[in-house]
Image 1: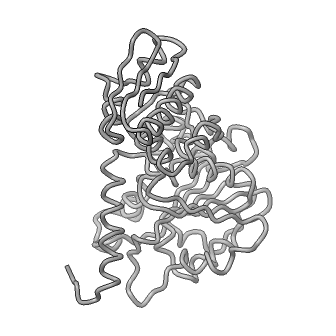
Image 2 (image 1 turned 45 degrees about the horizontal axis):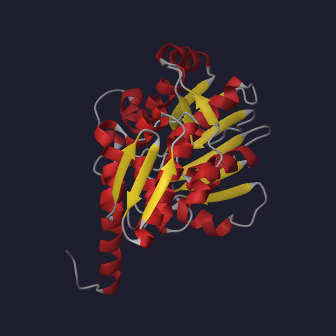
Length: 325
């Protein structure tokens, strides 16, 4: 079977094919098809089903390129996954408007359907929970949304916080004063802010109190009005800490809570507040729980494979409790 696709112009063709035709090679390998181009035409050859899937994938990539977006290998992988699920049309029609523009002029946009729903939830709710594996953009997109709200003067300050619990080390064993001790835990939040606003602006905002970055314990006793608050790594909160945080939220504020329930570093006797909150708050208006999956991973394609491998390993272990390795 053969399919012919008309491409609008050579620039779009070049973007779809990628450097050294890497995008098209991925499609050929995944669907076992042959893809050739001549001038502004693409010809696909292969079995009926695979040729159709390849056609849908390439047409989706053309639509993405027509929006002026760069096509990266993770975009190609995602489009092919959605083609297999007969959902590639949702990729084309999803809202890919800019969430924020970084200090270097880069536009931050949703790259997956799950990310688009997450951004929509942040915009439309007072509290949004973003739950999913590493690499799905939970924290990065939340910081982008916070900066956007600050720039529009919808909030007066941004508050970023994390529980100071990590695997392997405790604060008391780290060198330096308190600020030196907590900074390593908060570094990913600083990095995202530096990209969005630039280092000089972040430093100035920190000095003026427009941005506040602190461990979760510092939130106790505060009422957070006119603020955009992000609680990151929330899987490491206890039930009591989660309740404390959520009851701090004041008027004209938004909150985003992010975490990965598969990477809990709490002691075994402590339950994760992020797990409990999914049951307690799931039906409250103004609160939205967004679940991102391995399909929303926007890092190197190998990250998605690693996540899939761990999920398979853990499922197999549940079936056979004697398999410790």
